[in-house]
Length: 382
Image 1 (cartoon, helix red, strand yellow):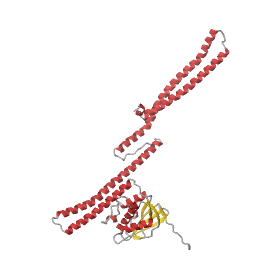
Image 2: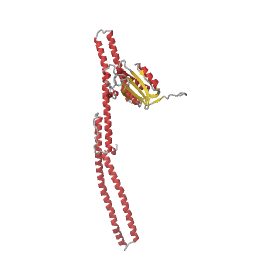
Image 3: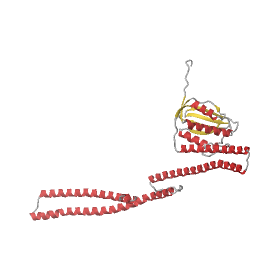
Image 4: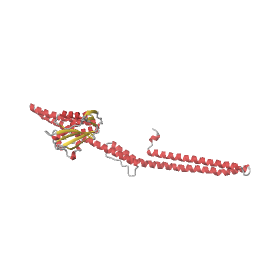
């Protein structure tokens, strides 16, 4: 490592300013010395043209006395330059050191804050001070904004892990409890075994669904993009609705070409239908329709359930969030379905939202941009 690389900001700035001062004074000294030498030569030529006023020895004495002031002046100028240059160099070194120290002070505080953050504490924030340069204030603002986003992301991650652990613990605890009850009986009858088997299988289905949702979220968080394909929108949606086997009503479906990932959009629609079913309850109505809009294709999932309060319509897309009505039902989901739907649609450049339904419950609507509506032909008779 070179000596320059081992220097701090203060040493580098002081040496740089000192070098600039030395170069500047050196250039001025060379120019002035050359000008004085030129003036001396001019005077010598003028005196040579006039010739000696008396004898040769006397002329040499007069010439020596005549040009000694010029040489003295040159010597004085050199001494003055050296004195002033040395003083200016010392002042420049001192000023550069002090300026660098003042400039490096907030940077040192920034480094200390970064060390605290690296140790795991995300609460410190940079404070460059009111007198700091605009560049330092911009750096501090960007760093503080990054810390706020990191702190928020870590908080979400902690909540996510806590909620996921709770959701996984609940069915496992239920299965364990039922097995312990069954194990305490020396000769359980077949009906009790079938009852425990049914409960255990139901809880295992819940665990499997939760694990699948967690894996889907992990893939989406990794930024894995959708595999886009050209789809016939109406037949694609009709097939998905029929495959749901939940007695879903099929409304009017827009015809046209949709460019999307069929597996991911199928997951979005299944999640929205399942959510509508849970809110509508047994015997409730769920309807799916679509329409071409200026933004692309809009798909609507309606139910006749109690609806979702306006204050919770944005929160239902948070991971593991469920409305109170959904929590009261044993068939309530994990609270990940709508969050997954939003992430999938965001990867397609689309959006999803909740509003009131004409059926009296909630309507979940989502839009996909890559849709080309079908242009119907006209007959010759108009």
